[in-house]
Length: 623
Image (cartoon, rainbow, N blue to C red):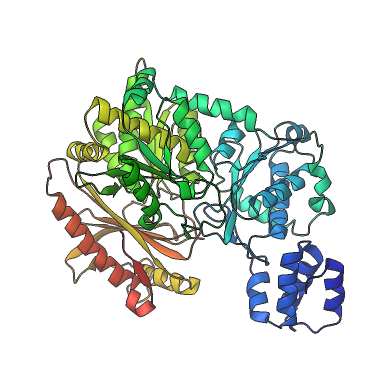
């Protein structure tokens, strides 16, 4: 039985609660603050059923800012995504921006940018976010239609805004949504801003009366849609990244591309990108072309999962296209597949495509620049991504930087380098995220699709090569890099912590003692870096160069034979992820041996370090 807030408050007064002071206080706060009938009813139904355990989980825990801001299941509770949590989060973000930019004139002129994808409640969450900022005298640039995530950071930079919010859960299942925050530099927030926002949220939990005032969305001069102001320059900047000869080659090359937006927002934007740079129109996967929050043909709409590409492969075979391009639902990531010599589609890993796009970014720069200064150029990748760019940098003369995992670190590093006068060509992470140029200081699947297609046309029609052949050429030049990466599911955060704590107190519980070998001493560990505790055995002061974060688990082991493996927790899912690599020298042509050794060692690491049988963990093998 659904009821109003007033009726729920009256009912609560006449019924016994749990007897747990903290829980009962949180129940009363929820009923007093929530104005969404559906989520209010969820809490009241649990109270009537005396489901105190569920209520304790939902109301006595709070969703925190993680790798991608907020991301959780949509349902009632302070631990979840819902209208009340959106208002609380927006109030906190607004208060923090005011603190950082105390000049009220900037609020009214520079304002904030808000976008949303095609998920359930995304538009509603965006509107509530807008209401909070409008009620605090901010100008609000809110997209009135679904957009890809890259348009929010681009608009923040274009409009010189104070911050941006994108409502999306990217490639997560349909039950989830998220709240991603960008700072005034156009990059995702990093410390101290994320901590500052989190603290400000906790200080602004009670909704202000105006935070629910939907009349603020009507005929408000401070509210505008930036779409027509930012779309033309976004595509103009893309065109400037691709020279006239390359655009001419795009038009003349017979190569065709099958495309899927994975039931997301990408199709219209990729279609326009292809027309702007003279590429033939993509051939869409018809079942997945329109935004659909149900994701009916891809319940887990992550294009990294090969099963999600079945319809794209069917469509490509039907239309005889040689390349498949797949965005995730918010169009910030890209998966690429290419027909191989056996008429099967080879799906490139993020590391493989990162190597190809790194080469392409350098090649494109040399073709476009009048006086290319390679020594002034920079490429960036996350610490769990392949080191091939590092090997490339050593040969070609540009600078390569490594960052922590996540594009918030890559984007901010790119800005730092650009401000120092460097030319940032490319950044990537192995999770199929690519930043080509700094026109968007975040991963951009729309731009990446346009560049991959241009690169494929250039290789096919100018060099008579496939992308697979070019990748082999890169291995010949810079050395073969064998990589493997996957995860184990672990829904028990306490167990996850115990697994990592065991690794860092391996010698009878002593601090900073880690495993020294695997497989009965066959492979010995040379050094260990722990970015959770701030320990690095390879540095003179035993402190790591990269930033430390106590809120997430991350340990890297480097073995004496050159194999490197990182174990870390996911910031958005209940997973322990692992990433391993063995990089060979250009003169080492025994690629199969490197791969065999890597797989053997990785089996040992999983068995001995994670103990899946003992801990009841299910290992997902890389496909």
